[in-house]
Length: 184
Picture: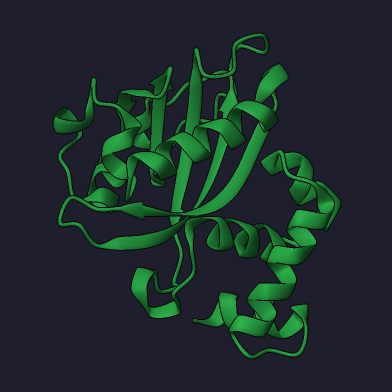
């Protein structure tokens, strides 16, 4: 067996996790694991907009705005969101991304997608897109102020959404909301 060469580069295909390289949210390359996660052959994805993998154009735009605000400067960013497979089924996904160009975060970026066991029954919970967005960020442990900054809302608006969610779902506190969200 040859010794490991730390300078050796692996093509995306050789890596076992779902990875995709994109420029301006257009899929330029992906590995088989990524294609399989979404139910596509890699060739079908190349040159396509990420929008085809979102439940709606509104979700695509909303996530783009969040990433634009948090992804600049060559930083990495992570979130959880609902995505859509080729057959239309929705699933929760943990996404990590890293911009390769600090001044223009979407110009070249690589993303890793991990499917989550959390069911994505859109109609089951009756949550709006904004409510799902807020409860996702709450479940990540973010404060009202951090959520407000990320979503360009006031902390009071986030607090009101959180309070209404707890009441709407019949919970007593945020801990019960997070437990429900991460286990359903």
